[in-house]
Amino acid sequence: MAHAKISMYLPPNINPAQAEIAYGCLALPKLNRELQSAVLLTRQKALVALCDLMHDPEYVYEAIQIGCLESLKGLLKDGDDLVRIKTTEVLHIIATHSVGRISFLEHDIIFALSFLLSDPNNRCRENMHLAFKHLSQLPA
Image (cartoon, rainbow, N blue to C red):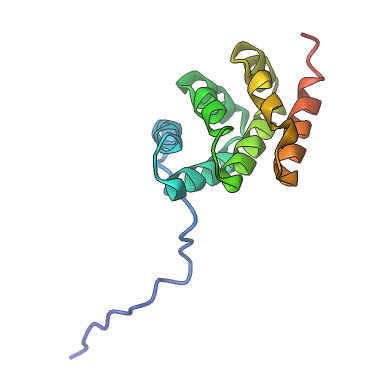
């Protein structure tokens, strides 16, 4: 008779740095809650997952409706470099969509981003400038 042997190692296809995303209409509300978490690793995982989702305009619209922009605006002041880099990357991706550019004006994201002009991290400043470049395409 065969015996079950339990391995002490993780399966090869599991990425520990990737957040678990809910399916359907529950994905973005869960990520928004994780963005407001006090645990640094949880915020980082949520930002990485949000970067992947924001390429779809439907997710951008839904994220704006549930209040992700306010959470992202708060993360721009975070002390961790990776959180600020990923936050500016998400905002840069949102700025590529027309609904995102209009929401930047409504939620005063431009003013919050302007504090990063003297950020010590190059990647953070680069993402911020790319977001401003996309915003300059909006006549308003």
